[in-house]
Image 1 (spheres, rainbow, N blue to C red):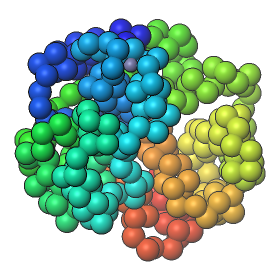
Image 2 (cartoon, protein in one colour; image 1 turned 180 degrees about the horizontal axis):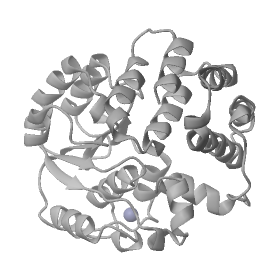
Image 3 (cartoon, rainbow, N blue to C red; image 1 turned 180 degrees about the vertical axis):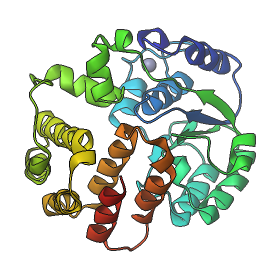
Length: 303
Ligand SMILES: [Zn+2]
């Protein structure tokens, strides 16, 4: 049930109302900061449109709801690509959207990270979202409204706000440590990690390696702790020490997504706002085939 979600009253009421209106098709843009529950709301809405038990809501228990939750319902599809959905994926989507539904109910396509869509892919998408066929719904997820304006104007925008510390039952310090990210906070609550024990910045490579090996929340938290240690001390560090830090990250992993995430969190932790634009620019370079180690060095020299 929508009421089981303990946040975003406004968005919940709006979506319940949309289902009540029994629209034949629709395009929605769910937007909210990173860490907000865009996917939870997208799946809730998809269930609400398709649930066989609960009129104008979802039960969460019927066969349809359970299959949507486990990703085994053919009429609800999640389209994603962390580096930006490609035009080939949009073409496939157009084909699927124009064929009939498997289960005879509503077809729902959830598109993740629409803020990363490239121009050609976005243009191809525009045609289909403007007038979706009967029984077809698009839910676009975006972490910002800095996307092609025609996509915004052709969809119904729904703001999904982050949960507050009270709603997640954590302290303000715990909340801020994870930048209010619901997924990370839930994992932290299940682990027995002590947030107050410090980790030196020189250990970041080790913790990245551990995290890749074990995927444990504690390893992830240790990466964040060493990053915080670097950020606290960076004004007192020599350039050579900053380069060492960048090299340690690279030694930890050559995975671009890991470097990108560390850069992203550094930007959030950086209190000198005059540097934000430049730092975002360097982080953005990772999408192109630039030398990763070099980009990391430039970034951490600059911060
Ligand atoms: Zn149900």
